[in-house]
Length: 246
Ligand code: GLY
Image (cartoon, rainbow, N blue to C red; front, side, top):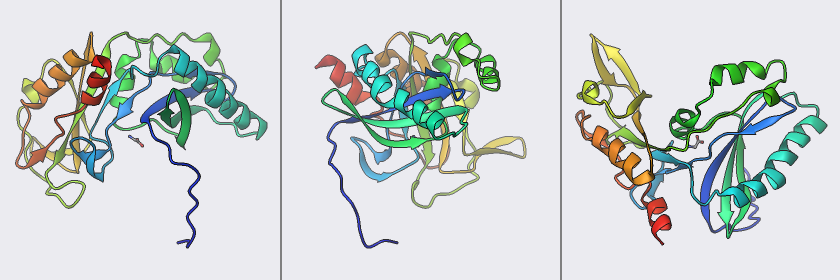
């Protein structure tokens, strides 16, 4: 709409998503995650809603997250209070890790997708109780227990997505998945059958002791599921595994 574009700075680094829960006075930092936005392997092709994600993100270590808390989260909450914005809920901060320093790319007032599919399974505390505490601003009285397990999710999409794609294809193999959690996004039930009903159809999440194992479980489950003309990225988490091995 505008003829002007302002380029502030080029940020070269790896992106990650940080999630904060606030009751308007206090906050808790949820597990961080990394998502994979492009349709093609090695982050190529058009952007999608997200083709997979992993949590935790190894470079978001104690020292990095301390910087995030001090430089970004605390000033954000204080800013909301100063501006008398009574916000209670999730804050999603999209960050770039530039040589160990966090830079904000975007804020959202929601959880992320498919980050939610790896963040929520790592929360061991009763999330409903924690959410209920937001109403009376008693979040600080609650304990947020995070699992040490690593979570990965792989999104299966309809062939052609994010361009045009078919709907109504019968999904096979869902009952054979035992080692993963299958989250339904673009599905519906038609004549007692589960059929595709969107571009991003399902996300297959697994938890394990390390990322390699979690990915193996997710991909093993993905291989059990099929429908006519489906697609998924086979390289989710590979950049993180390479970082770990470097
Ligand atoms: N996965 C990015 C988002 O939910 O905006």
